[in-house]
Image 1 (cartoon, rainbow, N blue to C red):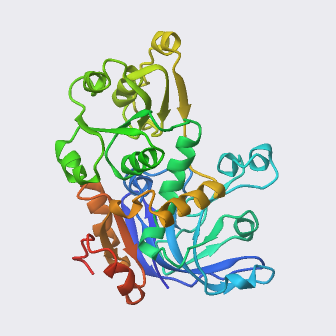
Image 2: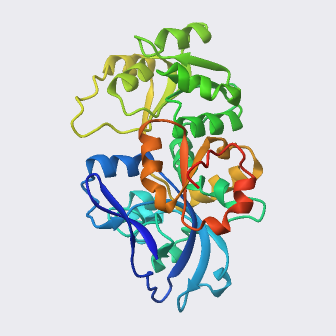
Image 3: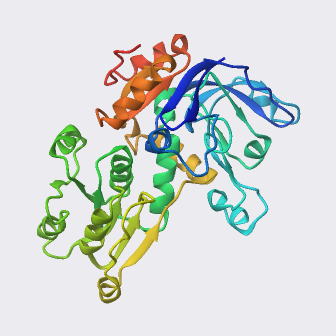
Length: 364
């Protein structure tokens, strides 16, 4: 099979290699589409302390089950599926509580094992047993389904925020994850303010119809959010930008008894976040972190996509062949679009591509 193998920082090559062999309880999936995550780009450009090359990256994927191992559910043969990539041990306190993504012994497809920037990907038996694999509904095409994993992370991030009708939600960052956060908050009845430092990025997504589009400016958008909320600030602030300044501004624009989600992390060499503890104390602000997702989040995300409550496919802007994956990574780095899809089997994607006329497919 062909696969894009990450060998070292800056070195990823499309190579011929043996198709994965599966054991008892495992699945072999023929990859239809795998999207490029910002984390994949950071790994390629700067490395990752927990990713040890050579390895195949790619964890946001949709495909068809091509082989079923002994003791795996035979009814999955030929099924179109997505999979939550973080695989817990299934026995620890976190796994038993449904937080398998926080398991200390978790393994992750596309990180600690080969991922889906390839024609085939192996799904371990434990992933099948723990419910990481979900069937794609008949009325969801593969390109829409590939957004299940990033949306699942968003579902996890908003789970603790209690967003509902009447809330004003400020989302800092108009990248793919920011748009998914805005979509999910909108689906829950919130008023959505989308903030970004680049006016062009805001213009690119203005047709999404959110309640306000705000350039962050010198103060990170704090005054603008106060202005559109009659001085109160936002009930919920979700920071999707990996910037200490954006995080500090997010806390500053939060209303009394508001909730803040620090959805992004900071680079290892970034200066520490200057945290105004008194602001959090006197306004009684709740501060939340968010990381990855569990299978139950994946299932909910897939239903949001199926129902149309979250217009996830709107963030798909480009598609490239597996042989042109380097171009796809360049598009992500240049912020030329939002989500970029990699297609290992072009001959199988004509129908799905026809359903997404917004996609730039010049490299196909």
